[in-house]
Structure formats: C-alpha cells, structure tokens
View 1 (cartoon, rainbow, N blue to C red):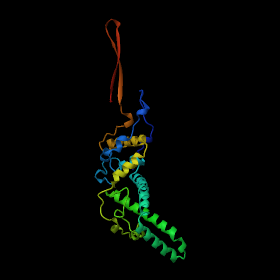
View 2: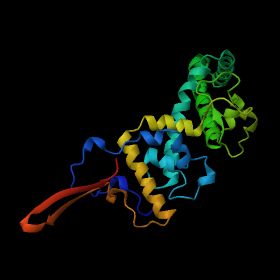
View 3: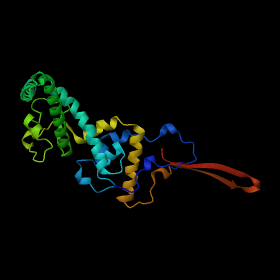
View 4: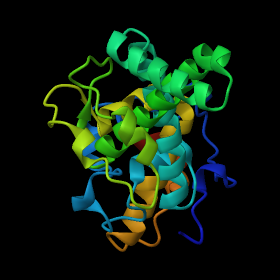
Length: 255
C-alpha cells in the first residue's frame, strides 16, 4: 500500500491562464488497446512490481490505495457481470434444470416438505449460476477466456462440484473443462467496466498512475502532474531609440 496515493482527490494546483474547463482530462485514451499495454492488471504478472501498484487498471477503475482492495472490488463487480448471463443460460438448459429439480425434490422429501421442491429447485439454480460465475472469475484472473453468453459446452461447474466449492477439500478441477479459445479475456472485461466509469474520473486516476510510476519506476520524485506547464506566455518590452517602446507577447506551448 502506498503512504500517499490520492492525487486525484487532493487539492490540485492551478495556473493563472484562461484554461477552458471543458478541456478537462478525459478518459478515452485509457479505454483502447494501449491501456492494456501500458498499465498492468490482475493477470499481467510480467509487469507486477514495476510500478507503484501491481494492478494499475484496477486502481484506475476503483481508486483504492492498495492492490487487494482494488482487485476485490473489481472481482465483485465482474462476479455480477458473469452471474446474470450464467443464470439466464441455466434457465434454458433442460438437463441442468432437471438435475436441480431432482436434487430439490430429494432434499424436500427428506425434510418432509415436498411441496417446497419447486422453490428449492430455483434456489439451487441460483446457487449453481453463482458458483459458475465464481469459476468464471477464477478463469479470467488466471489468464483464460470466458464467453459473454454460454452454451452447454462452455459450462464448467457440475452440481456435485457446487457442493464442494469453497470448502477446505475443494476439488473441482475436473469441472474446469477444456480451455476456451473463444470468448473475452480479463482485460476485455475490464474495458467493459471502464466504459461505465466517468471519463473525468478515469482520466484523473490515469494521471495518478503516470505520476506515481514516474516517481517510483524512473526516479523522477519531483514530478507533479498538476504542476506541469502546458503553455507559457511572456510579455517583453524593448526600449528602442528615441524613447520608442516595443511591447510584444511570446507563447510556448503544446497543441
């Protein structure tokens, strides 16, 4: 965790020019492919430790000071992103619905309440889809791909595997299935989340990363993004012969 890592929420320095507030830092540039090359994320271990945070895109999304907080928050959001289509799919799979109904009927019969079997079956389907979403997040963070909309071949978690999920003796490796070449990778799911964020917020947090990496990775401890000079204007006065004065402005800046 960084001791001071809140530039976007700190009091920012400002200049004296006629800066147009409509030209504030925007976040479009971090949403393209370059963002995935320039900033590390949860499954970009080759860049871990090179900058101020290991999970830089997660920071841009969430803004917490520690990798753990950022990754946990992003993972919880991705869990919901995956749960909805997983639950929608399982409702269309007759084999899985039949399996859930059989398990629910058995359970309700054992406790002497067979009339609750239908509701219990829906509860099992909900839990099954949620467990599948957990498997999806594990796949994404480990570098695999997960299709946005699944079919029977893409489904990983069996009902028996659901019973073991999260237990000390968990063994659901057999439910992982074959590696999927199609689908979206972790960075592409992050890009979806980035498109839902405020552009100004994304832009400011991107400047956080640029500033912190210049300080830590390149040793430029003096650098402050909000103190950068984008344009300088000089007013010069020349005293010519015979009392003639010449006043002129000079501009230096970036377009």
